[in-house]
Image (cartoon, rainbow over all chains, first blue to last red; front, side, top):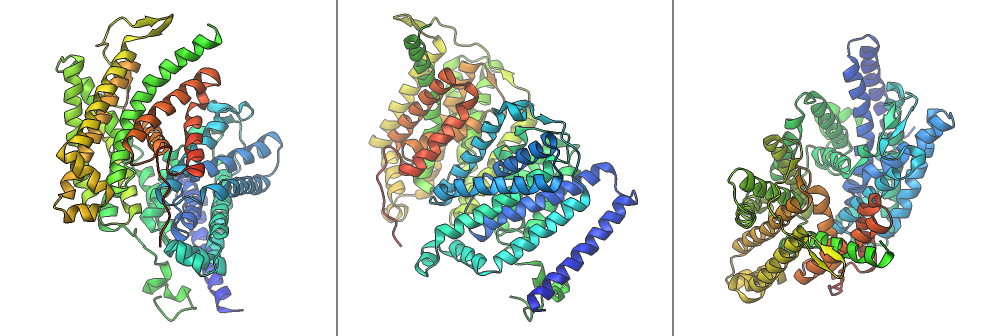
Length: 317
Length: 295
């Protein structure tokens, strides 16, 4: 077994320990139903922020339409589970595949744009996806899709999240991931070094969209009803905030960002009017004083107590 | 109503909606031309403008024209304050940081005003009651006339400022090349501040006019028009002032035609579809020149 696989094993053990503790607390009745739901939402948001980080953080393509892909995964999966009585896993895979297909189709033309233009174009595409869903009567239109079976459980969400994190971590550490990082650092230089920039940008976009679709499938089966208004560009902004808060280009950061933002908005649920003001101020101050986010490019293993998790390096990168 | 007259009626509606988009798009395009920032908060500045106008009319009992001027001045100052506090410290930061700050400012204005003026929509008082014109069987109502007139006046004024005054010349110089302009003794920070002021004042005028036209304002009213005005700015060629005017009108007309002949639910989708088509086929916009990317 090589060192990389040993590392993965250590992370897996750590993940299982966390799962054991949280699941034990949930089953033991120490966590109320409000926080139970929020823990599931945190895991879904981690999938969303990690997949968005692959596009925005690692590949440096500023996408603002992530909620649109989530919506596609969401609706495709609920059609399969509710109307055709398929199991959740089929819905998740189909939702992810549909979102990936759409991501690839959308990514091919739009990823020619860069910076601000790409941001606005993806925002527009996300909105178009939502408006199109709103106009399809088969899925309930603006009123929403009702009667969805409640299939999402904590183990499902947690292990999907683990798979997502492993996949993205290993993708980033692979040849393809390195190519994506090179594109982020300097697209022209990367192209000059022989990297097919379009291919890798579309690849990152497609993978990101696929996981957003899977997250959407899980999200849909937490509730009995889903509505296109859950997938506005405000939702995309929300995922962006998680990624930026944690650090563009840090997977640890995405986990932390999703956790902090979701837990904070759950804790502030009784004061909704202040929630967004605090959000806004936090975002502005973060850009002033720590524009690289909480973790920057650094992963958990750069900190001393966690260094044992990473055997590939002697210490800090 | 037969097809032809329906078409002309939709065109009239489209031009009045498009005028408002054009007023907002001007602020976007001027700011982008100077500091290359998509000011996401611009739509919310427009919302604040509508509320200032609302309070000027209901609390201070002003007429529509004094209220319009008060709203433009107050909102223009707000725009300058926002620039000074939120964007100036990030003048040399990466573009993404400034973009995210703009999103933050946008949230702050939306939910801050939601806190102060309550999230429920307010009914804009009917301050402008005049008979509309009927030309060859088509009605242009009083509010639409007001929108056309004020937009025309403001655009002439803006063209005068940009083309014939010292500050306008400075604005053009800074937008062309900030560093060289500074070497020629132009205070770039002052120019940027004035640009935000003028852009915000125009958006405020748009806000008050929309209040008069639709009779309803709410703290989140700026989001969609803000995005669409950006689409208008891109359509005309971002950074180009006549482009924003034309882009706004074209977008307004297309939206009116889509909601009149297809379905009003696809109105927003049409705007974004235009954006994507423009970005893919002529990213420099209708009035823009193609520029070569240099390493």
